[in-house]
Image (cartoon, rainbow, N blue to C red):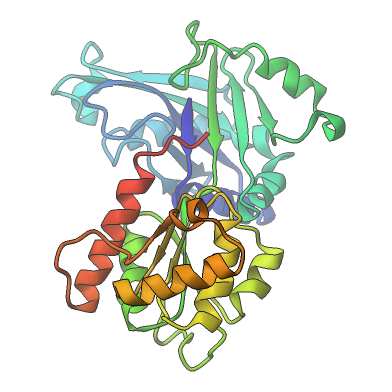
Length: 339
């Protein structure tokens, strides 16, 4: 299975929506198979407009010229097709695969997605997964929004997806289907727009996590201090009451203030958050655990908390502490299989 969960994927859909509104015709190219030295992984996508504007990438540059040329043909009435580049192909030398590799790119008109585009974007905004099955022979796409059977009118979608049990790496064994799934980005929610958060936020962002910062104190939660990340000027319990914590979320408390940290921990410990961590000394953490036990949480519950947070690298500065926190989150995250 191919899983896509980066902000780039969301950007592609937003760009598609923009072009659709402007009535700009375009095609979408998808890497469906690779071998050897392919510069971009399976599932990588690129949009090509009728004006030869591109968004995204299927090769990092080395096969884009040929993909753009074929995309323009499809935009102007040509049939969807698969382009194959490899060492046995003269094109390989032109596109930079001289060290031995193959890439198969499927190019189609984006009209194949027009009926599903808004729902795909809405699903990503709501952190809801969905899957797309591409019929490479008949040039049709089926989008499954993982809704319950009781409320799912997509009978044909379900029927087509039932054929795809032999898919393991994206393309089916008979190479007639390609399937990929969008899952929400893993997210770090930071409680407290404090000094350490100012270094932790850009570090989290550069490591591929979505970031939210919760702090009701406007003097702390300002765009001047946090140009990256989503600022939420609410109390944690107020925010989480309408925005449940999912299993791809890490909760990090940084304030030392029980009025802010504890309400967040109450919600985190009742959730499937993959990581919970709290800043503070061992003494501060012991007091925190006692408050949680007194509030009705079990020892097993509180053992989920990483406190004091961060790997032991003898960190001292805010930047070093942020590195230790980030390293511990990555260590936990990469040892979990999200399904």
